[in-house]
Image 1 (cartoon, rainbow, N blue to C red):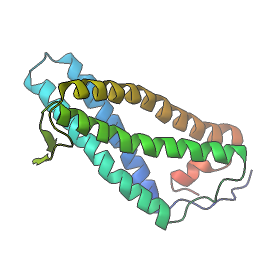
Image 2: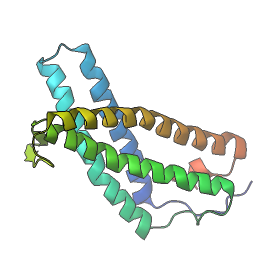
Image 3: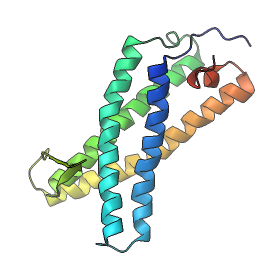
Length: 176
């Protein structure tokens, strides 16, 4: 099938793949910390990197939204497939905004510092251990949902590439 939609901008493409690398690193840090004993330096370092990289996702998601607003992208949804893709993108953006905020709120309510590459960010709320526990549970649950969102997004890209052969993946690779 011939391609009918324009390519994404280089900024959008670069931010898309950078966000993927960051999300993989965020998940890797929090999962790899489990191989180290509680309180050990490597475990604490991985947790700190998880926090800092998560907050970097939070900052860059706003850059992605600006790039999406100000640069070329495929047209507005017209088919059920386009509507599903749009809904998936909304879910992914909501995920990339909510997760860092929930993590920040968890640390804040737990009375812990919020590290960000040499800075200590302000707490979002006063010390409240019960709130910290509740928000942490929500954060972890949405983290599992994130695996599904990213997996479905990748699966859809492969479906477009190998089954529909509509050039969607090539556009996000900058090869349109």
